[in-house]
Amino acid sequence: MQRYQQIALGTQNILDFAVQHRTQRFLLTSSGGVYGPQPDGMAFIPETYNGMPDPLLLSSTYGIAKRQAEHLCTLYGEQYGIETVIARCFAFVGEDLPLHAHFAIGNFIRDALWHEAITVGGDGTPLRSYLDQLDLAHWLICLLLQGQPGQAYNVGSDVAISVADLAFLVRDTLAPRKSVHILRVPDQQRQRNRYIPSIEKARTDLQLDVRIALQQAITHTAEIRSREQERLNGS
Image (tube, rainbow, N blue to C red):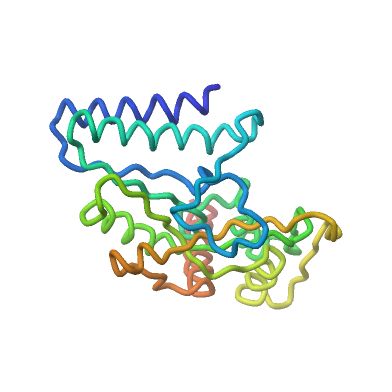
């Protein structure tokens, strides 16, 4: 309940603030979670896909709350004339990414830097893609300034990589001598989990694209976090 209220009511509070201060444009950082599970056979999720999370599952709270936040933007745009633009964000990597949370790439970078081996908690089969946070910042500014009011844009990379391959890429980039441990055997009967956006709309309408390659983003992230840790150890 608290998470839902933070997202939905928090968005409404900010929209009320925008109305009070006669803000002309409003950018909502939403999520690809609004689409629900990516269907089998759909390589990239387009903005026109109208799937949704199952409202009867507690695990859907985040995606449903983001859908509610998006609809609030539509209502406020209609009633108050605020030019609202939606950024449906997917997965990212960069110096501000937590290394001790539920983000696989952050955990792999942490393991490569400071642990004996890189551990994949699942079976490594899910497909993900990652946009560097510097690209993310550039995209969000462009959407705020140039995005079409009342429209949603996927924000992320469309270069898919399995979680297992990601672990090996991090290993090969940062710690070639370390091993990769995948804790679970893949279930061949289970549908493969995908979370990959189509970014053709952003490419076509706003000339946005992935500028920083994933390996470069991993290297930069690791360098920054290593320097931070060295400063902490020296303090």
